[in-house]
Length: 132
Image (cartoon, rainbow, N blue to C red):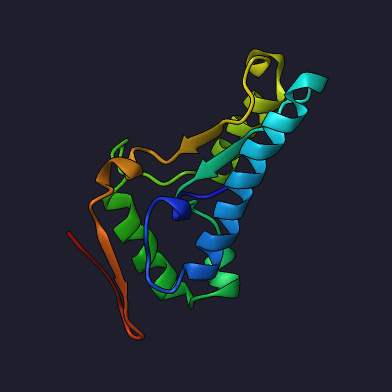
């Protein structure tokens, strides 16, 4: 699993972005090394997923709801966030024979969020804001 955090800069996400960037490098280099053995190596890079992770581990419930609502505004497809099941569908595709000629790929699954790449993110202690 990769992440869109490798392409979209957000204050306070340095270590997460760094670790996911290392995964991208691992995927590409492993794919190169293992292709001659018929081994495929790919990853999925989702954007914001509507899940309880932030509520349980990072933010309180009201801050999480506000954050998710802001993220929805930047998702071009139906102004909706990904569900864990939709990310799983992308993973299942990569594991299937339908992707038998794919290796070294990092599939972006982001509802069009990356197209808003000129956004700058700022996170303050009391509020989360997005400036363009």
